[in-house]
Image (cartoon, rainbow, N blue to C red; front, side):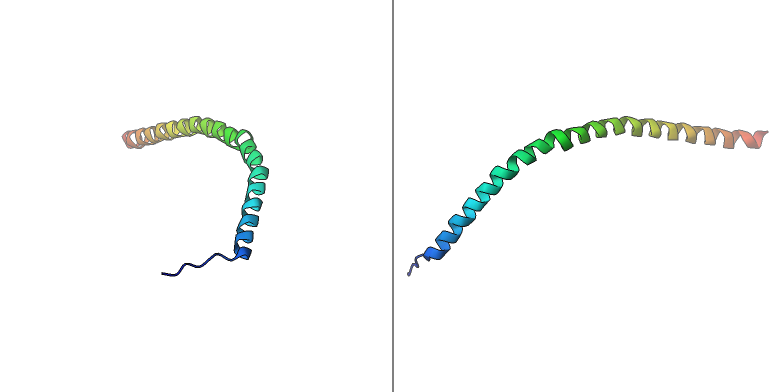
Length: 78
C-alpha cells in the first residue's frame, strides 16, 4: 500500500481558504445576529396579527354562508 504526501501548495491553499472563511464568519456573524431583531421578530409579530384577522374573516365567511342558506330557504316561501 502506497501513501502519497499532500503537496505543499495544496496545504497552503487549504490554510488560505480556512483563513478567508474565518474572516467571512467574523464579518457576517454580527450582521446575521442583528437580523433577528430587525427581520425575524417583526415578522413573527405580523404573523400573530394576521392570524387574528384571518380568524375574523373566516368567521364572517361562515356567517355569510349561513345567511345565504337562510335567505335561499325563505325566499321560495314568500
